[in-house]
Image 1 (cartoon, rainbow, N blue to C red):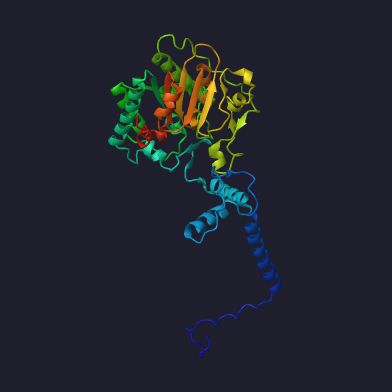
Image 2: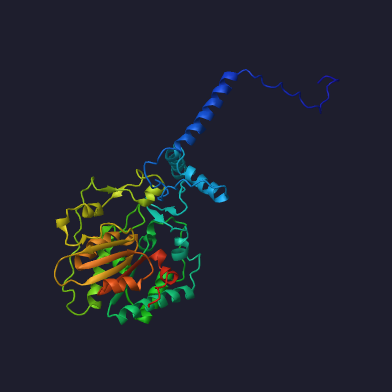
Length: 397
């Protein structure tokens, strides 16, 4: 090393890079401006579908102009639902998460084992609340549900109307073996077990516990969809049998002489395939395709002559469906239900001269007075089992 060189001196900084690519830089800038402009212009196009493909919700409408914060927030949501190439970009994002990291793109969809998907509820906490036990359901909440169901039973009994309630187990209750290995169940009884025990001890409510029947049936056939949050029609048929047996017992002797057998559609291997709502929510229907062992679409697309029970309300009220069957001597019914009852509708409707299906949780005395049913059926899914207490029956006048 020469004597005049300082060993602690830093090396000289390199000269600045020459600006020798103006054409490239200009082209990249123009491409960027074009891309964001096309994405923005794409938002002006009317959506092909009123429901977003991945979120399963309605597209946010454009707001009326107003000089306030609410307009800004609504405009941002509406623009975000419409910008150009939205679905393609979201699909690429979802593919990267699922295939690259094994993570779910949707906060309320859980990737299980063996290509099973599980719905975690609207708030994403259903598994924690109803299976893992990491979110508490208090004894007071259970007692409030029992009290509300008893209130409904007493009101209906005062009118000589039978009342039958049932809770559809969530998929993780019937098929826990396909949950991820890190999911463990609480040692404490689940909220559904506690509610069932409370109703059984009380004895006032005709409650149909579907768990044992579904667990037994799954040894013979798959009773829930792997890619959907719902049971399939085979599972619904198991529940139908249990519910109708209880209804026959609840009605006066001879009021329902026989129960219509469940007419299940035929399955064609390789043809009847299905990708459910959970597969669509994470944007990967092709990855999660399954055999549709009893395609409900064939039931609803069958000619009207195939069933006695026919819809007669014309679809005027989105939350109410009315079916009628003209066989003599059949009873009347009202059913409060959620989406789990969709495959039950064509089965139950064969047993009643008139049955009104209400998508709601609040029992309406005015509707009961108007319809004069022989039986009221209340169905709810496990994750919504606390809802009767949240939506108490309207006051009787």
